[in-house]
Length: 237
Image (cartoon, rainbow, N blue to C red; front, top):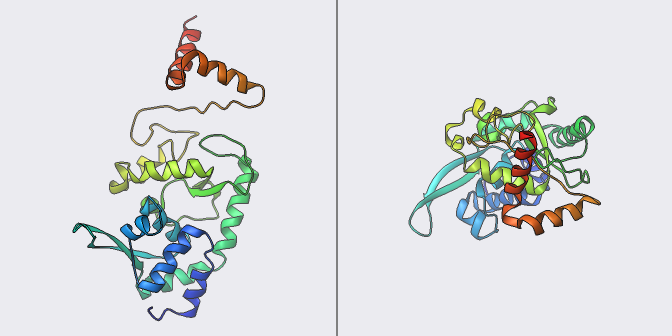
């Protein structure tokens, strides 16, 4: 293990979430971690998401290429150089507390609900995510809560997969992301580059029976098409 300052080690130790902590501990022990190891050793199927988790704690990671087991070049990650580490340490004080404050500020402003699925849930389940991915926008001013959004765990996983497979993941155009459903579901022009509009329909309480009747009538695979047909016919009246 390299000789990192105690201050930097304390910052690493402050990360308690399982996925980023796993990546951090591996790098501390082996000096780097590969996308292959993240997936095959630790079972995280989306290595870029695991790396993003680390970076979102303010810890700089350098990406480079190494040879994988199959002879192809794969991504590898290590902590940034000394200058990057110094910059990180100068900004890190209070970051964990501030992140908790961001979550509470979002809940106070919007309620304890997922921005994408509009589902109300326990505050402890909700996760805070950057509206525009860190890899594209860069560092946010965490004092502005509107840079962030509340997501259910499933919505967060879905967003991560969509973002990492979007054409803009390489182009990194902030404007493109700022008009995407996955960043601003309340006001958007496209869904990951596709001209689409989406709405989540939740069935609760007595409405559950309506859901089952819909599935029985239309079939699970065509329920969405049936809903759209009913809406279309309603407005033609």
